[in-house]
Length: 164
Image 1 (cartoon, rainbow, N blue to C red):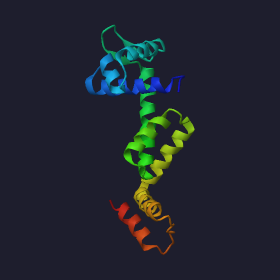
Image 2 (spheres, one colour):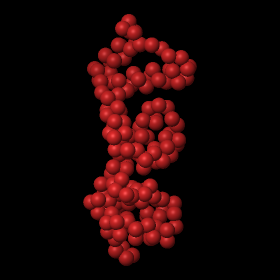
Image 3 (cartoon, one colour):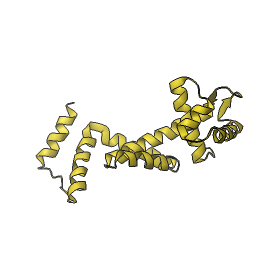
Image 4 (tube, rainbow, N blue to C red):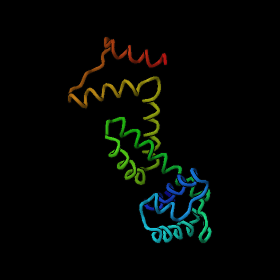
C-alpha cells in the first residue's frame, strides 16, 4: 500500500489509535504501544515524516497527515475484517488477532474487497448465524449435515433471523 512496509503500517495504526484516544501521540506513547524502545521509534518516525505520512515537532506531538490517516484506516479495516472472519470460522481469539495482524499487510485490494462483500453477504438476513451454526456442527463432528428443502430447522432459523 503506497510503498509502506508492514512495520510502517503498524506505526501508523498505533499513532491513529493513540491520537483517537488522547488527541495526539508522543514518541513514548508509540514506543509503548508497539513494545519497542523510544530510540527505535524516533528512527521510524523520521522515515514516516520523510514519506509525508506524519507531521511531528521535536519533543512534541506526532500527528498523521491525510495520507497517513488513509493508510492506517485501510490497514485497520483489513485487520478487523480478517479478525471477524477468523472468529467466524472458530479460530481462538488470540490466534485470530495474531493472524489478522500478519495478513492485513499482504491482502490485495481485490481480496480485501471480496472478503468484505462475503462478510456482508453472510450478515445479510441472518445467514451468518445459520452458517456459523452449521459450520460449528461440522467443525466439531467432522460430518456434513446437508440442508434440504425439508430442513425445518434451517428455515425456522432463517425465518426467526429475519424477524429480528
